[in-house]
Structure formats: structure tokens, C-alpha cells
Amino acid sequence: MVRVVHVGNNYWTVSKKRPATSNDPSATAGIEMEQWPKRRALYHATEWLEWLGCEDAMMRDPSAFSS
Picture 1 (tube, rainbow, N blue to C red):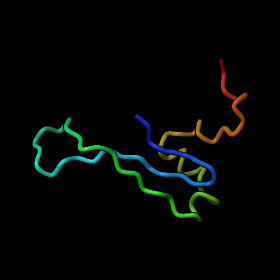
Picture 2 (cartoon, helix red, strand yellow; picture 1 turned 180 degrees about the vertical axis):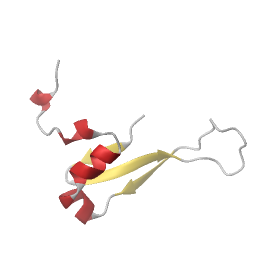
Picture 3 (cartoon, helix red, strand yellow; picture 1 turned 90 degrees about the horizontal axis):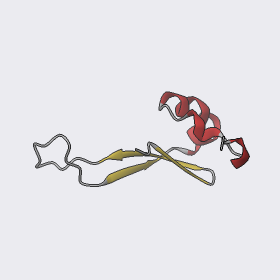
């Protein structure tokens, strides 16, 4: 599952939205995206991505990915 979306200089945290009326723990009603505050994206992105387990998202050059 995608946990972080990075487009341009903006980041969004992605999470599953659970329906309020369902007792099924696997049921989802879509996704929610919360945009990161500008200060977090500019100055603390590396730490937050590491905390979320998304360290690879900091690679900026596509050639840095192994083929």
C-alpha cells in the first residue's frame, strides 16, 4: 500500500478510511490524503519518511533505482 505521495514539493500521507457503520475490520470506504505542512516537507521530510518506513522516497534521480 502507498503510504506517502510526493508530487513536486508537496507530500501527502495516505491512509485507508474506514466506514463508520461496518464491523468488518477489513472493510474500507476509500482513502484519505492529508497534505504535510510546508515546514515539514521543506525541513523534516527525511526524518518523517524514515519514521513512516518510506526512506526510498527520498531518491530524486530515477537512475538511483536498481533495475
